[in-house]
Image 1 (tube, one colour):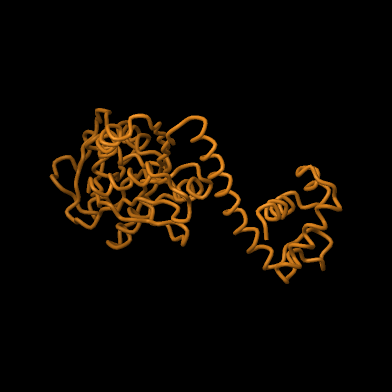
Image 2 (cartoon, rainbow, N blue to C red; image 1 turned 60 degrees about the vertical axis):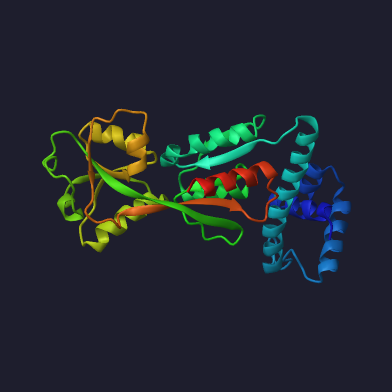
Length: 293
């Protein structure tokens, strides 16, 4: 089995016809057909289910396609990286981030820059579970700082720190006199929460559920910055990481209320594809993050 055969097979699956796949691969249709027959013979099982008129893979074909795509992506990335090293020099570093991670990332980057002054660093927001998984699987980023624990055997997920969640309350709210609050104090309040697919939403919903308190969701958001603006406008209450509040560059016109319950918190992880080639500078940055905590 050769990388060329896997590329032909993956293209055929994506194009769904031999004619279109052959055209995209700049092959003749008989050549592509012969290559696929040879691949099936080598593997000793069928990849394409010929019982159906439309193009359909066998179970074995689906497994091969899934694994072939990962291998092809990895092959393309390594090829690109080697070409770039030859033509440009030291590699770049791409990191996916959640908003609250900015309380420590600048300090780590400062140390990294002293050691690797020529490396170009790209920072990209990867907020939801699908964002993180897609960016890692497609090699858009080398690693992610995320509050999502990723259930994927290809991805290494390492806990690096815990951070408390706090409530943001509009000015003049009836709870402003309380130094700390209970979940039960928020019963019936209009709430601003992250939309489905975000771990912070699950953390908040679970905390309310444990206390038997109904969460009255009125607004769904993707970014904490949006939630803060809505709270400032008096449209509801939100729960966000304490580190985001403490290290935000924006002066918030809201009241920050910690919870009595210390378990209202979240874990932040460092995640990377453990089967991917990671340049030495990427491994060094991972080490610096671990050393910071």
